[in-house]
Image 1 (tube, helix red, strand yellow):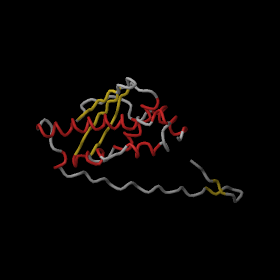
Image 2 (cartoon, rainbow, N blue to C red):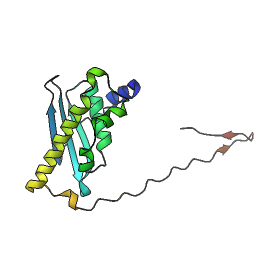
Image 3 (cartoon, rainbow, N blue to C red):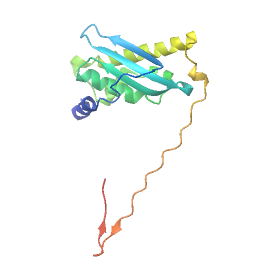
Image 4 (cartoon, rainbow, N blue to C red):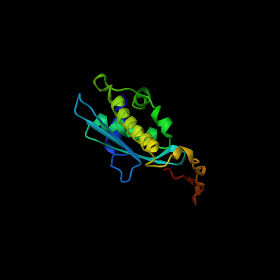
Length: 162
């Protein structure tokens, strides 16, 4: 397990918040430990997950796992998000301790409930079928340009590192 990455995920808690006006949400309650996981999705044209956030009552492993899922899902289509596997989540941390191996399944179950909520809303007509709308094209990210070194009076170069 990559403990420094795990620790960073727990401290930063990427995506840890509830979402107002979510397109869909899904909750999973773990009977084995009492943890609750809830994902919120904002879906846009092309059925792309434009925003994702979560709330959990779980421990650090629950928080880290949900943060990993938010990082993996954002920008994917609903179908691509549904295809994420526990092994993909586990690989981000280079594995989980044996007693925590089921955390990816728990988080993904909550994600699948949110995806099912989205699909049910589309089927009932309560939200538009975003999959039928053209996916927005993104402008390419500009390539960063390294600043030119600054010559000093003594002929040496000053190079700024960031």
